[in-house]
Length: 117
Image 1 (cartoon, rainbow, N blue to C red):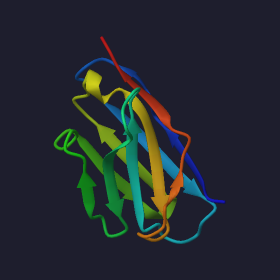
Image 2 (cartoon, one colour):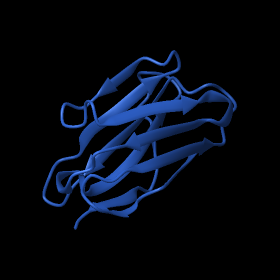
Image 3 (cartoon, rainbow, N blue to C red):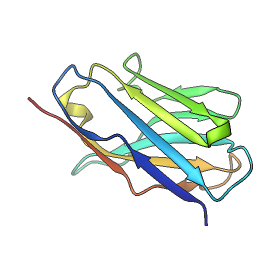
Protein backbone atom coordinates (compact mmCIF):
# COMPACT_ATOMS: atom_id res chain seq x y z
CA UNK A 1 0.00 0.00 0.00
CA UNK A 2 2.69 2.45 1.02
CA UNK A 3 4.91 3.41 -1.89
CA UNK A 4 8.60 3.95 -1.34
CA UNK A 5 10.71 5.50 -4.06
CA UNK A 6 14.46 6.07 -3.96
CA UNK A 7 16.48 8.36 -6.16
CA UNK A 8 19.93 9.87 -6.42
CA UNK A 9 22.06 6.88 -7.27
CA UNK A 10 24.65 6.97 -9.98
CA UNK A 11 28.27 6.57 -10.93
CA UNK A 12 30.90 8.49 -9.00
CA UNK A 13 34.67 8.46 -8.65
CA UNK A 14 36.36 7.35 -5.43
CA UNK A 15 36.30 10.20 -2.96
CA UNK A 16 33.17 11.64 -4.48
CA UNK A 17 29.76 12.24 -2.98
CA UNK A 18 26.15 11.40 -3.64
CA UNK A 19 22.91 12.21 -1.90
CA UNK A 20 20.17 9.63 -1.97
CA UNK A 21 16.55 10.50 -1.37
CA UNK A 22 13.65 8.29 -0.42
CA UNK A 23 10.06 9.44 -0.31
CA UNK A 24 7.17 7.45 1.13
CA UNK A 25 3.64 8.08 -0.05
CA UNK A 26 0.27 6.66 0.86
CA UNK A 27 0.55 7.45 4.56
CA UNK A 28 -0.39 10.50 6.57
CA UNK A 29 1.32 9.52 9.80
CA UNK A 30 4.86 10.17 10.82
CA UNK A 31 7.00 7.13 10.08
CA UNK A 32 8.65 5.69 13.16
CA UNK A 33 11.85 4.53 11.50
CA UNK A 34 13.31 5.25 8.10
CA UNK A 35 16.51 3.76 6.88
CA UNK A 36 18.89 2.68 4.19
CA UNK A 37 20.27 -0.77 3.46
CA UNK A 38 22.54 -1.96 0.70
CA UNK A 39 23.41 -5.15 -1.06
CA UNK A 40 26.45 -5.77 -3.19
CA UNK A 41 26.77 -8.72 -5.58
CA UNK A 42 27.52 -11.91 -3.68
CA UNK A 43 26.99 -10.28 -0.31
CA UNK A 44 24.23 -10.16 2.26
CA UNK A 45 22.09 -7.09 2.67
CA UNK A 46 23.56 -4.84 5.32
CA UNK A 47 22.46 -1.90 7.38
CA UNK A 48 23.68 1.46 6.20
CA UNK A 49 21.81 3.83 8.48
CA UNK A 50 18.48 4.36 10.21
CA UNK A 51 16.80 7.36 11.74
CA UNK A 52 13.79 7.54 14.05
CA UNK A 53 11.02 10.09 14.24
CA UNK A 54 12.97 11.73 17.06
CA UNK A 55 16.12 11.90 14.94
CA UNK A 56 17.96 9.14 16.74
CA UNK A 57 20.43 7.63 14.26
CA UNK A 58 22.23 4.36 13.83
CA UNK A 59 24.99 3.64 11.32
CA UNK A 60 26.66 0.57 10.01
CA UNK A 61 30.30 0.33 11.02
CA UNK A 62 31.55 0.58 7.46
CA UNK A 63 29.96 3.96 6.83
CA UNK A 64 30.40 5.75 10.14
CA UNK A 65 32.03 9.11 9.69
CA UNK A 66 31.34 9.18 5.97
CA UNK A 67 27.56 8.94 5.58
CA UNK A 68 24.88 11.09 7.18
CA UNK A 69 21.21 10.24 7.38
CA UNK A 70 18.49 12.84 7.85
CA UNK A 71 14.75 13.12 7.41
CA UNK A 72 12.00 15.57 6.66
CA UNK A 73 8.85 14.37 8.37
CA UNK A 74 6.61 16.85 6.61
CA UNK A 75 7.70 15.38 3.29
CA UNK A 76 7.95 11.77 4.49
CA UNK A 77 11.42 11.78 3.03
CA UNK A 78 14.71 10.38 4.25
CA UNK A 79 18.09 11.35 2.84
CA UNK A 80 21.48 9.74 2.82
CA UNK A 81 24.43 12.01 2.25
CA UNK A 82 27.35 9.86 1.17
CA UNK A 83 30.81 11.38 1.25
CA UNK A 84 34.27 9.94 0.68
CA UNK A 85 32.78 7.17 -1.38
CA UNK A 86 34.94 4.13 -2.02
CA UNK A 87 34.62 1.21 -4.44
CA UNK A 88 33.47 -0.96 -1.53
CA UNK A 89 30.37 1.23 -1.30
CA UNK A 90 29.20 0.00 -4.69
CA UNK A 91 25.83 -1.63 -4.13
CA UNK A 92 22.13 -1.43 -4.69
CA UNK A 93 20.78 0.85 -1.99
CA UNK A 94 17.31 0.19 -0.62
CA UNK A 95 15.09 2.40 1.47
CA UNK A 96 12.90 0.94 4.22
CA UNK A 97 10.23 2.80 6.16
CA UNK A 98 8.37 1.60 9.23
CA UNK A 99 5.09 3.01 10.59
CA UNK A 100 6.09 1.50 13.94
CA UNK A 101 9.42 0.02 15.10
CA UNK A 102 8.04 -3.52 15.14
CA UNK A 103 6.67 -3.31 11.64
CA UNK A 104 8.75 -5.10 8.98
CA UNK A 105 8.64 -1.97 6.90
CA UNK A 106 7.99 -1.06 3.31
CA UNK A 107 10.77 -1.32 0.78
CA UNK A 108 11.65 0.70 -2.25
CA UNK A 109 12.92 -0.74 -5.50
CA UNK A 110 16.48 0.34 -4.87
CA UNK A 111 18.86 2.78 -6.47
CA UNK A 112 22.25 1.76 -7.82
CA UNK A 113 25.43 3.33 -6.56
CA UNK A 114 28.65 2.60 -8.41
CA UNK A 115 31.97 3.96 -7.21
CA UNK A 116 34.67 3.48 -9.80
CA UNK A 117 37.57 5.31 -11.37
